[in-house]
Image 1 (cartoon, rainbow, N blue to C red):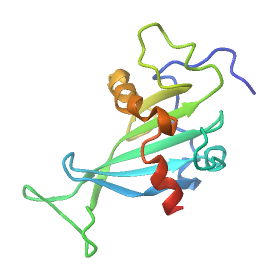
Image 2: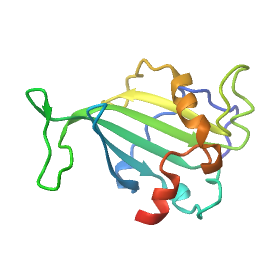
Image 3: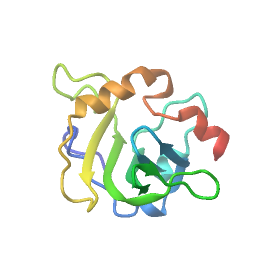
Image 4: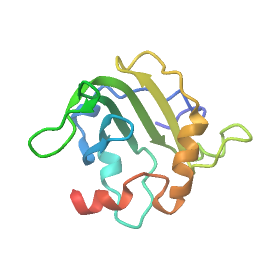
Length: 156
């Protein structure tokens, strides 16, 4: 059912069932940030075809895990991948018809995407400047503002 009003950044919650969704891409190691990222996409988003925008109703959840350290050195597994050491934050992207136009003046355009940021419990809002989310995704307009868009089609 359509929402009465478009949500604003910070108003998109963590879907309880996201762990049952398909991964958008394989695990992403962010060595410079000392992070391991897991990105999930809901069944609506899985219907996207390469070269097309995501349909309204798409939701993506990104888990940010700390990478385990041995002293100051990041620990890797037998395959050279970073080892997770605890969930730190959850970021959510959701798309709905007209949501972009409903955002306040001066918000960086990201099409109809809206963002949420949560502490590891999925209930406590994380202190995040949503403009940083929007600024990072803005150059990806050709990929409907979704990082790793092309990789998704080569790894699914």
